[in-house]
Image (tube, rainbow, N blue to C red; front, side):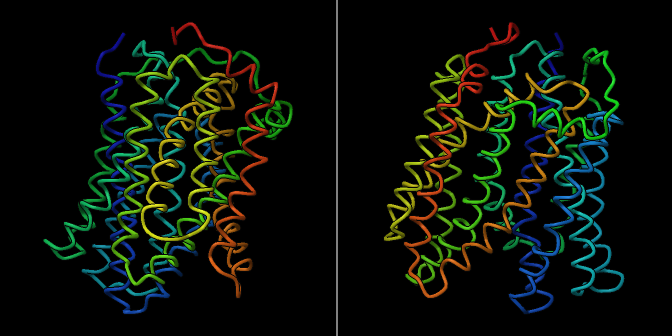
Length: 399
């Protein structure tokens, strides 16, 4: 058992997640600062979305072909170079819309493959450290919540203390730290599956042949389809109509608080109760959509986001663990990449559908539609026989 493996892995995950959370604040700010056009900030984000999803799909193949650790390190180094390129170009030539799009796409090409590579490393980290997958997944979920909470806040603070272009160097350094820690992390290899994967579509065939695996991927995609318009359309529009933009930030922070609380709950009481935790996560998601649906006031949205955060922290680790346990070793990068890619593509689709739905209608119509859409998915997730079998299994290294 290597005692330093898990701390290094979690610290690398925290550094990378923090850098991503921070750059999501710094980049739009920088675009606004240089162009003085709010619409261009959205343009940069939208143009980067599709290449990011395709990179996640292709990155899964590269992970399986060249190795998880190698691809994790390369992705973080590439992300750091793309982010640092903003500062370099600004100094040498001056940033304009073209450079923002080029460097935004370059950064997006590395972010999702890097996240996928670190997630597929969980099995190796568990094998090396002697810790159970549930424990590692629970810690990762908690770190996600803390990074989501602190990353934007610290980035905002740094923007008040120094020029925005200098904050870019801080976010680039986070990715380099993550690459360094993954690179030096002691890691034992897991014996490869002896049967070769001759079929280039082996990952897709594996997913289609497994009802539980299909359900997990569909569930992940549908959640992104519904959550994206909630975060990017409904909540901003609600608080803008109230003339209280500061409360939007507090409501988003409530989600991060919920993820931290849920991570603690999962680690303390639910590690060995997957079936109960799975049902609880789905019920909490449904409760959050119902509480948020009226789109009224301040405290109801806050409560809804806390419930959503807890549900995410309870359910998210289970998805990672179940896929890690049941996906063939040789296909793990491709299947995780497929899920990440489909989820990334679901986000803009959800935004477009919500825009059509809300045309000339009150926000509550969109809110209740999200709750209605999640209900059958949650029921399906809780009663599916094949998934119940997976949830009932507990591997020996988790005992």
